[in-house]
Length: 121
Image (cartoon, rainbow, N blue to C red; front, side):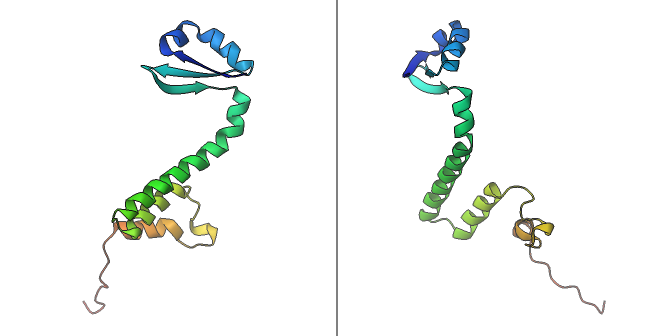
């Protein structure tokens, strides 16, 4: 089946019918003021695409960070921001074989260097 495009008013008026159509394999794009804002697809298709969507989002973030870097931002700052967004929480923790890993690195970036204390007083 093809892709059907409808406006938000029509979507509200016949939402139940839209769900029936989508469960039958049809794809529906909903527009607001002529701009596409949502797509209804069968849930099986969504489950198939779900992992790919996350990869695509991460690739877009990487491309954005690269463009910012090309415009003169510090490579270290871009790496820090990208690493902070991409690395799952706890992935580089103490038990991962990476020691303090990214968590330690991020803490070091936020704290000023410490001066050693004098042992003699």
